[in-house]
Amino acid sequence: MSGSVGRRGFLAGASALFVGACSKVAETDTAQSLFSAAQGWHRKVHRSLAERKALAKEYPRSAISPSFRGNGSRTVDTDAYRASLAGGFADWRLEVTGMVDTPLSLTLDNIRKLPQRTQITRHDCVEGWSAIGEWTGPQLSVLLEAAGVQEGAKFVVFHCADTYKGGRYYESVDLIDAYHPQTIVAHKLNGEPLPEKNGAPLRMRIERQLGYKHAKYLTAIELVDSLEHIGEGEGGYWEDRAGYQWYAGI
Ligand SMILES: Nc1nc2c(c(=O)[nH]1)N[C@H]1C(S)=C(S)[C@@H](COP(=O)(O)O)O[C@H]1N2
Ligand SMILES: [Mo]
Image 1 (tube, rainbow, N blue to C red):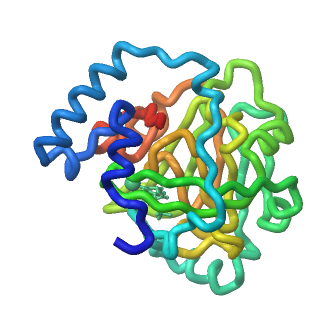
Image 2: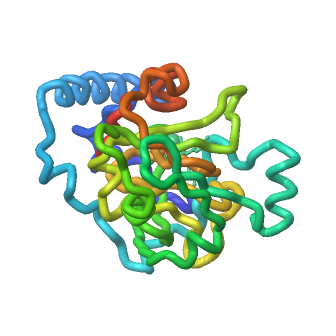
């Protein structure tokens, strides 16, 4: 498969950590036993803070996949998005809202002028494919510090512009992943503005978590103390619909 590092590598690397339920993967026997074993493992082991803070592996430029697949939504099917895309996303805003001292409304220019981080990492999707890409953007922590996270905030919710199969996509993480140094708001892939299929103009990279956590077409970052009133209350699109694990750490 071009643009992929292969399913076997992903499963070997992620075997004990394969905590995301996925109907497609779960259909095969091997995947089913792997999944059940991982569920048990997940219940028994409590990850230490040090483990949660560890960095995901970064790769050399030579490892970058020739093409980075677009998965799930590959565009936002609205006139507003088409117009925004045609205008180079000059009107796009990223809101930082909820439990913050100073709500922010950032343009892409604002985001490009913040200190940037570039990292070459491997994306692992529960559907059984992986790809390596180079991502650039400010660390989420920089935005959170600028907005001032209020006492009592526990989760960061990522709101997206797209609807997938009739539902608005969203995701969320706790503050450990939010402040992780490799958690960035990416506006570039492999040195170029983010392609439409990969979430233009902005998407999350949350390198210690599986692919479905990496919200594309990002419009707002909301600080909350509970996920109960967001979506169906499970913390994300696939968590609500298919029982995927909310904590998808790898
Ligand atoms: N807004 C939005 N974000 C999303 C999705 C989506 O459908 N909509 N799909 C998720 C899944 S399952 C994966 S594997 C990755 C795919 O990212 P890619 O299109 O850059 O490969 O995006 C994630 N983020
Ligand atoms: Mo995925």
